[in-house]
Image (cartoon, rainbow, N blue to C red):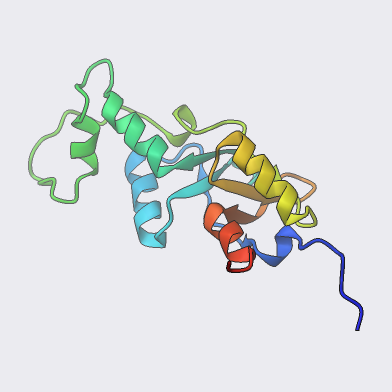
Length: 155
């Protein structure tokens, strides 16, 4: 029986239909999406659904720890806290949206890209996810570092 020499493709390991957020989503909405879906990052899409960036929990934490011109670092964590007392009057939330702190040039892949090539690109770019897009830049899947590790045979 002949052994296939065809390289394994991204479509074989990607998670289809990734959870996406819009660039206009606020901090609370983003935090809720991460928690409810048990994910650590997501593609960011425009109003038409096309990829414009990627955002991660690390980006969210970094943004919250910076504060705002009118608020000290950590203030945004208080806004995100589930323990925040709804009766306590907070300073109105500064309008900070995902588009303000996302990575605007995400690493992308096509479904028929070889896994090894995408793994190398992710390693070189030092990123943990690649968004799989179609010809019109609509996200159709996502591949994470863990997906790549699962694709390699155990040693």
